Amino acid sequence: MSRMDFANSTSLCDERLESMFKNGIDGWSVGTLTVRVRYSRGADFSGTCFYADCRIYINLGRHLKFPYKLATNLAKVQVVRRGWRRQLVTIETRDAYELAMFIFMHELYHLLVKRARRNTRQKESMCDRFAARFLVDHFGAPIRDGDNRPIPRESWNFQDLDGFVAAAKDKRRSVKAARTPLLPRTPEQPGQQLLFAE
Image (cartoon, rainbow, N blue to C red; front, side, top):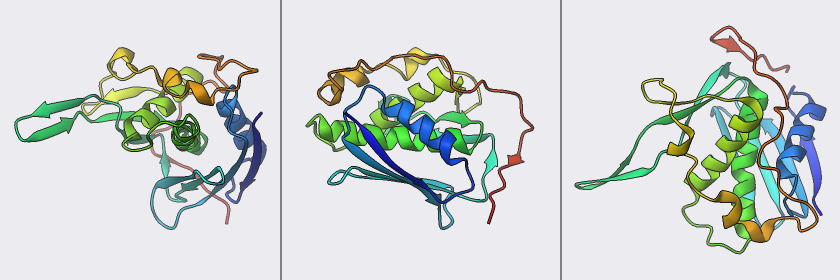
């Protein structure tokens, strides 16, 4: 069974954030998960997962403007003559709630990998795909290439992410692959700034 110890020190709605995060852990066994949402000290955003006591920290910049295009590790790595490269792929977050949800799901997957007793090294791409899948399925978040063109889902959603961490599933519940979006996406003015209360 999973429980959440949630606290938010930003101006975002506590109830909305907590409900979104609880929806994200539905079907997974994470024990008592401590989640803290706070302002960053200047960076656009960051997230941290502490395995030992199941803590996730989400840091959001006060200065962010939305919609916000988040650069990801979704694309497959391409081997080139002297190494490798990865195509730029972005996911558009409509507001700070969606950005916080992406960070939360990314860090949650790190925790699921650990709880499933998998090797935790070099899992950033899988964590990004897990988070992106959630935003696409629940919020219709667009995913685009470096030229701002939509890219097909099969080009980034090609791994069995749930199967990889199957040992971390809640045996009494099944993880729902797709649900009705929590909030419909609506057109907004480009460059809209999210104003945080002091």
